[in-house]
Length: 445
Ligand code: SAM
Image (cartoon, rainbow, N blue to C red):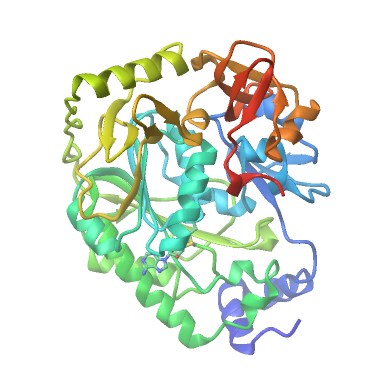
């Protein structure tokens, strides 16, 4: 593979000549692959023995694992469909870990699609607080939403909004903010040789300018005392430590926070870390800042409850009683003919390009509610009145993912379908058969 000489010169400036040669000698080796486990759905000790591939613990994230054997078709595996894990290059797991998420935090993932880091954040929040995930490119925001639903994130928002508008309106609202910025992607080069052809000095500089501007927008929505993590998947100093340095100059209300974690290689600033294949990751950079002072986050209002007319109230109550053993502790919200379950702490969302807040529960028809697929992924199996829990080797799992009708022991009605206790979707059970409601777009062809 011929790499641009400008890229090699740049690499020498950060790694030195010897390590650059080592990097080049590793260029055609197998890239690192990994997964991060989603604790909203399962636990490592339960999931790992069920996987069809071998794993080793990641150096960068406590719930991250290297894939160390063949894992073809991993995206079509049932545990992936069920959101038990997210396929994530191991070093990419480092940035979310640096946010030091605490239960109850309000977290913004500003450049979030396709959603690997959002998935980690949601797993760390564990159905507390709020995760707002934003993506400025609309079709990527849709992919983000579909991953949100797969991972079962209920206390979240997905939006498609320009960072300057979003962060201005949500000023001081977040305890933790992640800017995983668009970059020249040098850390992708071993995996994606095509990306190499897009490299140029001009692109690196353009990325650096854009990154600084995104960071400066992000600064506004961090509360005093809150943490901002900046990350990229590139090696370039302009896009990384120099952008971080310029940010600190432009925003003196932030201070650098040391990174003491034992991974990667140090940069010339103690608040940042670089990971290359020499440190057993494809390539990542992360820097960490804290907004000086200490204040409560702003806008801590709870969402106002709607008043429904008698008919709507009755339909909703019957629906929730039918589907759930215990009603979810989320706020009911009707928009058009859709029923949503919202996190209580939701800030005003108007004009912020929100494409989903909370969980889509179902569609209100004349006399009943047709449940949405997302509802069954967002709660544990024990929440549902009826569930069909299949073992991983049960042939019905595969049939269900293919959209087929399957045998169903149990009462008639809407039934959660789970694999090894992890809800995957739902169907309607009638006379021992389950009519498949797994969405057509998600089925295995
Ligand atoms: N955090 C994501 C994850 O873990 O899956 C990866 C994010 S990717 C590195 C950067 C994202 O920033 C892309 O989805 C890209 O579309 C988005 N982006 C592009 N231009 C942007 C801009 N001007 N402001 C904010 N985000 C932008």
